[in-house]
Length: 250
Image (cartoon, rainbow, N blue to C red; front, side):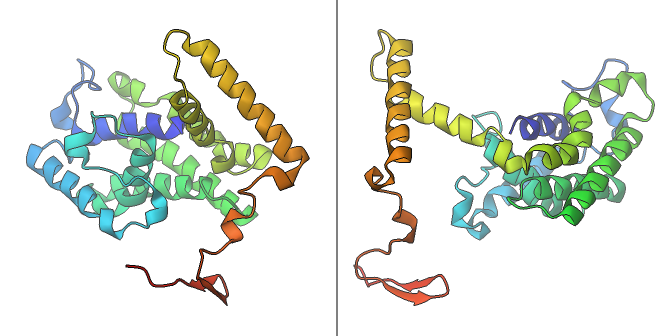
């Protein structure tokens, strides 16, 4: 999760030609990769991102908003993930010069493999090669042995070299990322209703949830939702092969 945010925090300013990331000894005018520097191109690109929403599956939860309008208004990590690594290769095709686009696609392909729930040994090897190639080429393409660009080689770029090895050690990235923890934190803080003593209130909420989870684990019959996913709505007919016919509704 934080890897995605850190990569976005590096790549988007580079593509936009942001002066915030440009060293005083460097010149944005020499950045041939800054294809979103033009305000009109940035606005058009942002509109393309927003226009892609109807074509995204509903299971994607939060579609990325127009980055030209909302990127500084609480843009979520999930939005950055879908925007850069889902839509990015298609929307940046023809904008980024070919060598930068191909380098970016290697990153996207590696991240997509990393986020799979199941990764084969062959896919793991492919991911490792792609991410290693990306990091090596990134330094060649963007840093170019220029000391004033050394800060582009952030820890998030280096971490990509270890991604495949970590998958081999602890499993796919999606199962060990912080998405679940952040969601849990959001759920628990949303239950706080005692502003005068919020931390004590939060502790009690956590204890109560842990006790309920322990009871459900010990006595599964107490969990009313345990078979929820396998149950069909009232009036529905199971057609088999994971299909169901739902009753008509007004």
